[in-house]
Amino acid sequence: MKVKDLVVEISDRQEIKNFVEANHYSKSINGVKSSYCFSIKHNNELVGAIIYGQMSTTAWKKFADKESEVIELRRLVLIDDCPRNSESRVIGKSLKWIKKNDLTLKVVVSYADPNYGHTGVIYRASNFKLVGMSGKDSGFKDIETGKLYHSRALRTKYKGDFKPFVKRLREKLEKGILIPVILKPKYCYVYDLKASSQTA
Image 1 (cartoon, rainbow, N blue to C red):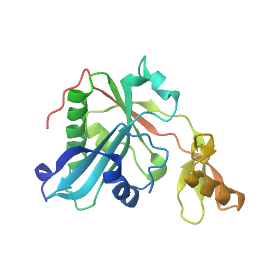
Image 2: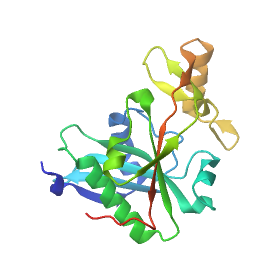
Image 3: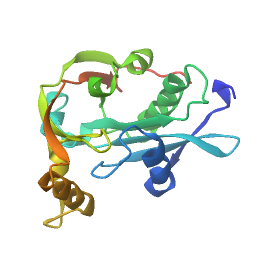
Image 4: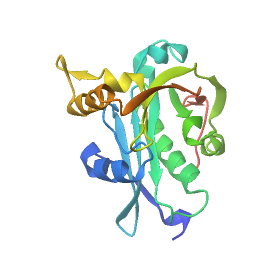
């Protein structure tokens, strides 16, 4: 497999959902808004995926005047067999598509989570600019699986009711399986769609 052979295409959420949940460290896209999804294929086989979507909070106000001008890179995953530099190449291709097809957007935001050992190396390689750190936040750790959840994960509702995965988490909390933790601040990276040019 060579980096240049990876094909990045716009796709629907359902096409990549199972792949992301099986291969991304979060193991879930519950609660993740998705504006644009991309499949990454090699010889027509799915080897990666990217999800861009609206930010989950009003944090967009830090980056633009309108929410419609900001999008967040919510999920990026590639199988381990993909060669070195694959991440920056596929990010570049997806940003090139967004820049061409959505003239409203101005800024792409992404966070690197040190709670999972990430510092944002691939974002720096993709011409994102480190603009600071998020604040410390509260969350929960599943003592059975070791997974971390942001406190928002236990508050997500749909049509006034908690989503099924939220109900399962709240049951675990009641049983003492989820324990409160303080989450480390995340590295915040920004890509200026209007000022930057991508090469593929």
